[in-house]
Image 1 (cartoon, rainbow over the protein chains, first blue to last red):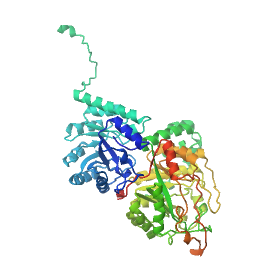
Image 2 (cartoon, rainbow over the protein chains, first blue to last red):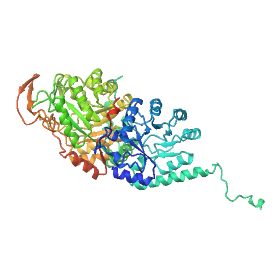
Image 3 (cartoon, rainbow over the protein chains, first blue to last red):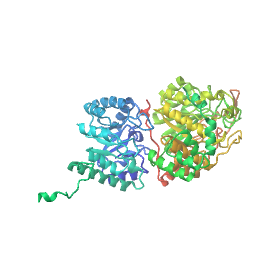
Image 4 (tube, rainbow over the protein chains, first blue to last red):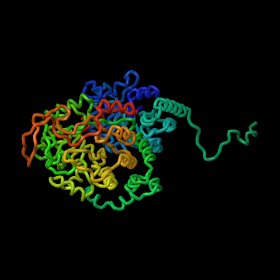
Length: 243
Length: 384
């Protein structure tokens, strides 16, 4: 789960609990990175490190250099060496920069970070990042906050098929059905934020996503029925021949 | 090609006519098809404001969530070399002036920190002697250790002169064209470097080249017909989104407030029209930040928050030393660039504010409205 866009820290905490999330990402730019306990930059105080694995993110960074600097400050401030690497220089669509992301990932992996990079659904980039030692890849379904679902489905399928690291489908999942669809495809996890944070009832929406993710995962493990163009009667007309 | 060329070739007359004459059907068509033409339809008298507001609210929620960023203006100096008819700091106004020292600026800023602010906007009149480039750089450099986000609203500079200020730690630059109407601009700016319309118009591009991450623009409403200003602002945003694509673009919709010089607005913009402008901006440019200052009343500000505003100031003072009385011993009049000794309680304000609530009161109102006041939403480590 992400932690942006919530109406209050309390509401965010309640929605996170309801979601059953294990990994929670937080924008370092909203936290106090000076080592103090700034009550006006207190987003971390709402996140219990015993309840979740904290995944600080570099949102706001436009270059590898900025992301690395922020990551190091974040590691000192939060004590977490896990990092969601986000570099989106374009504030309009917040699409990730593959060149800067690759550069930063190589540096940060060597620096001891557990790097989870946010990327466009580019199968080759996903392989390159896995080869560089990233812990996962986090391809987008559609632009952040767009709620458009799995617009990158065909590329996601290739990424999942070729993956040697867990695949987390991140961004653009606007409905529980989108999350279920990603899990049915074989994604290892999804990352949800806007759809829950801006819902009229974030706690119940978080529950809805939790169930959708579980359902999608179960369906993937069982294996979905193959799709056909024509009807396939459940009671075959020629069944009597076998009696 | 700079925005000046784009601006000069805008079909301004046709767009303004459309902004007056668009039909309800045109408005309906314009929704969901962002363009300058559709923006013109959205600000037309035919638009159903309630419908725009509902859509603008939903769009803001999706892009920005239930959070509002807070910032505070800090006036460094009210010295100015320009004569601008509408501005309290105009050179020909016999007002009490002062320029704070960087140390005094830090003291004022510390007060703002105790109020909660972590985003600061440094404002100053344009004066090469009192408000020199080195002075601006020194102020930024001294604030940097305590401020995650520093923006400036000062007279336009050359790209090369912006760079040391960016390197010192400045992240944002705000520059209002005041009016995009060349004739009115010429009539309003009687003397000083601000007379150069094109130089000012190209400022955001120079700031971007120099490395600023956030660019703020806007028109001062009350000088020319608001619809024509709105169209020019929209064209400017459109240009900056394409050409300065790594920068966050923000826009403001300031209306003229009472100030020294007793300037009376030349045109009127009603509350209703201001709301329509904000909604049209949000629907046309969903990702653009909209800043709202204390020029507007508490009621209007509270009402605008769900419709598109993303950042607000609170408890503002529009004079140097306004928060803690810094610089009081140095108050003076300035005539022909020379100090004339004078005494007073405080420096003269740029304009009177309309929302006198404290930052804490504004934050608590935001909570009541279902919004999280975000004081820190940037980190100095993100500055290039």
